[in-house]
Amino acid sequence: MRLLTFSTLFPDEARPNHGVFVENRLRHLVASGEATSTVLAPVPWFPSTNPRFGAYATYARIPAYEQRHGLAIHHPRYLTIPRVGMSAAPVLLYAAARRALAKLLRDGIKFDLIDAHYIYPDGVAAIWLGRAFNKPVTLTARGSDVTELPDYAIPNTLIRRALRDADHLIGVSSALCARMIELGADPAKVTTLRNGVDTHHFHPVNREAARTTLGLTRKTLISVGHLIPRKRNHLTIAALAELPDFDLLLVGDGPERPALEAQAKSLGLADRVRFLGAQPHAQLAQFYGAADAMVLASSREGWANVLLESMACGTPVIASNIPGNPEVVQTQAAGRIALENTPAGLAAATRDLFATPPDRAATRAYAEPFSWDATTAGQLAIFRSILARK
Image 1: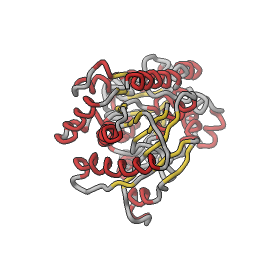
Image 2 (image 1 turned 180 degrees about the vertical axis):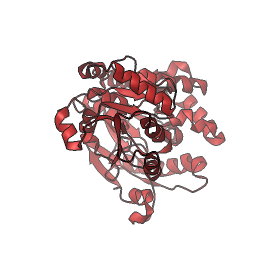
Image 3 (image 1 turned 135 degrees about the vertical axis):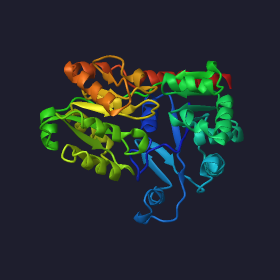
Image 4 (image 1 turned 90 degrees about the horizontal axis):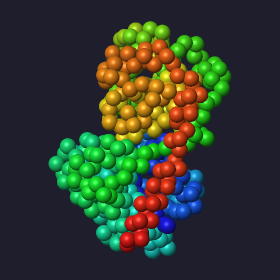
């Protein structure tokens, strides 16, 4: 079967970790030999690559076409409009994507089905593309697209229509699937297909060597992800004040970094909190493997890949009690879910974990069944059913 994968969440030359979970799912699907895909991953238009423009300049550096892991990826540009961007985004995204897709068809690209990721604005635009080109559409919900954006009037209306009109809906956790049904989706066309973890890439490492490389001498917690408000790294730093025997590594970068550095300094923790910046996805196993536990204090997640990545490296986790996380952390070998999403709650969960720490081999064994195989099989079954009906 021939797919058109459509999403603004997809890695590129300038942002290799952006939406890597979408790429990973697609790579394993294509590796099955049962499907091929052309990727249409639009990016915002911006006229300058001058670094002083920050993230906008990064958009300008993204090539119009590239190949990653054997996948052909097209990056058409679409306009973004300040102040009204949220409401106008589906229309602007659709207009650019329709032009790009028409050109791909003229160039001989063929596809049977549109597989879109993130419901708004991507999924809304994908439904319109399906109508324009008479193709079935599947949508995958990944988090805030159904847990937060429906709080706004225009997105709410368009999200509900997209859920109604899609041929099938996929949620990366049961909580997201339940939310789509709350928003009016037909339960008969909603399926949970969790993200997997590449257990060949994320695996136990030589801990002594990894810790020596990073200069670790004490028990060490790690947090991996963008330094943005919803990751709530400030709670993790505050919890460290209650955990005098622990240090903390923050792997990632983002707009919150200056405030987090100031917080660590104000709490007298500057020598115990290390900011390591963004790291290549291919090297994360060394960081997970060196740490004693991974902390995720997020206020919302769809399916937090970092939890499985850490566990696949043998490192247990401490996670906030939000929808999705308890589906990942189900046993004590995996780690702990904080009873309260507060610094005290995170500290208590950490102390509980280290009172009877799991064997790292048991943590790894817990993660091993979470491969991509079941997700790939689920996608193929959905796509085949849709195409048979069409």
